[in-house]
Amino acid sequence: MAIILDFNALAIPSLMVQLHAQDMKKLDLNYAKYLILNTIRANNGKFRSQFGNMVICADNDSSKCWRRDLFPNYKHKRKEAKKDAKVDWDAIHASMNSVKED
Image 1 (tube, helix red, strand yellow):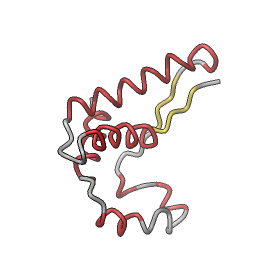
Image 2 (tube, helix red, strand yellow):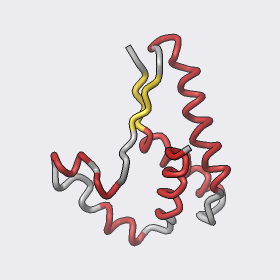
Image 3 (cartoon, one colour):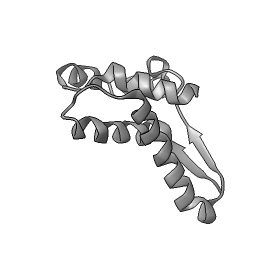
Image 4 (tube, one colour):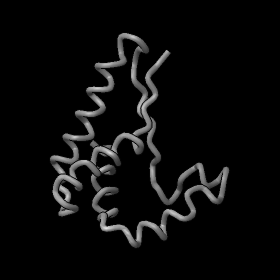
C-alpha cells in the first residue's frame, strides 16, 4: 500500500494559513515552501509506518487539468469566485509551482 498525497489539496490550505495569519498580505515564497514541504514531511512521518511510501500527485498546469477533459464543468464557477477574493492566487500558484520545480 502507499500514501497518496494530493499536492494541491495539501498546499493551498498550508498557504492560506500563512495568508490569514498576515491578514492577506504578500506571500513569502521561502516560508510558503517551508510550510508545504514541512506538511508533506509531517504526513509522511505520521503515516509511513502504516501505509508505506508516499506518492505525491500533482497537476502539471492548472489550465490543462485532466479533470476538465473528463468533466468540462469541473470547478467552472471558481474563476468568478477568485475574482472577488482578497487572495493573490497568482502568488499562491507561483509558490506551488516553485515547490514542484524544486
